Amino acid sequence: MSELRSVAEVADLVAVIDAALERFREEHEIVLAIDRGTTDGTRFGEPRWYVRMAGEEKDVITVWLTLGQRTLRYETYVLPAPEENVSEFNEQLLRRNDALVGAHFSIGAEDAVYLRGELVDAAVDSAEVDRILGTLYATVEQVFRPLLRIGFASRVTDR
Image (cartoon, rainbow, N blue to C red; front, side, top):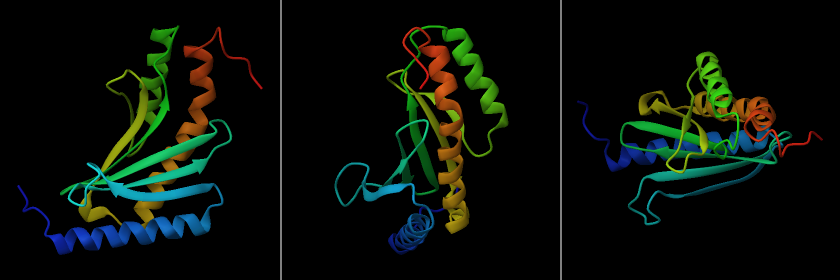
């Protein structure tokens, strides 16, 4: 197993991610906010970023990036657990997982649907951060309305 990263190495990765997110903000009008904190709310927790983007199909898409000792984890909330057509809904998620690269649909503790992924720390650079945010944003925009139609069919009226 590899050695844990030093404080200086973690600080270097934080700087890379900060710069990549600032570049992403400058290049994309959809960015509403970028905030940074830690997983436990203290200065000793894992560094964590929140990137809020304006969507078209889903009003707001928030991506969480969490820097661990060995990986950068990322996720976004897609929608709550389906109320109906559960088998068809889950089949859609599994079929869509097959086409995704670097991310996958999963079910969280509260049965909500998330889009998640993980990248080894050594691969973290500006291009990868851009790819992560772009992939999660585009995927949520693509699947949000179709999944609503299946999982909440009796309550959804198309705009």
